[in-house]
Length: 361
Image (cartoon, rainbow, N blue to C red):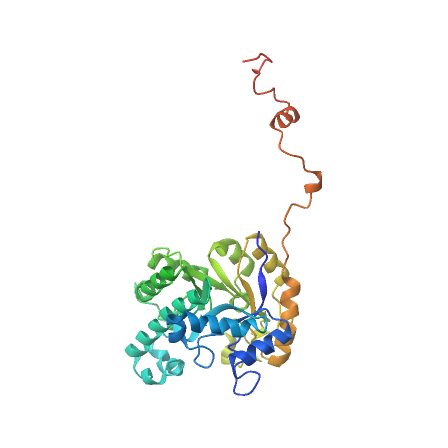
């Protein structure tokens, strides 16, 4: 078994205009000071020049060297925003347009082509950085129809997933060429938002081995999905892990759908680590038992607590939940070397060279 790596921290929620949140170097120093061992880097020009990283080994070596000075590694790169733009239903065009580079905004076809290229560049950059997994979103064509009313036309969801698979297949092939897993965060708002939709997607890409999962239990709490059983079912596809807490407290007024309320007022809301309902002891135990080899990365989102406090508390929380796996069974002190003859005697069986009546063969 392998001990989970960590703690890491996803930088997306902390990036800002003032130090220490303004540059990758400052963020690395800040994260190290809190006890983190790695950063998950969103592919924004403020933190990484993706085109250069995809082409230049010296650029990537320099980036890693700058982080090494602070004792910080790169856990993964992230193209959540670019991945979202691989598939956008027209209902969300305006809302998602700000995720794109300025020169493709308002141009859905050009925006999609740009997003596809960005994710492919991230595959190459990941390889140059020595990474074996990448974090992203799938985007969504079917999400407006998640609730089956009005009645969906026959074949609508099949058509949406066929198109989603068509768009992602060449991207997954690009990840295969680089030897990097493409881990989709299973997330409401994406067409891949639970196990059933992930399986449907796998069918459209011929069970592509690079189509993997970014596991985040908080999104399952809000959907009322069994986040522990999910690990049992899909552990061999999990390549990334966001450690994020959540709670779900339904009322007589509102439940899973949230009543269009703010995050503070919704029955299901994200919380800082330890403030919600997620059983992280059970999660880390399962991840260790299933030999998860990646990083445990804090993604901080909380409707109540200040982000600086969430980040400060996150590193020791993750560190204390990581199980340093045992190199041998707890009862090895009583073990003896294999002795087949002795085992047969214990079972009341004759030696192998004797017949059933004690006759030598």
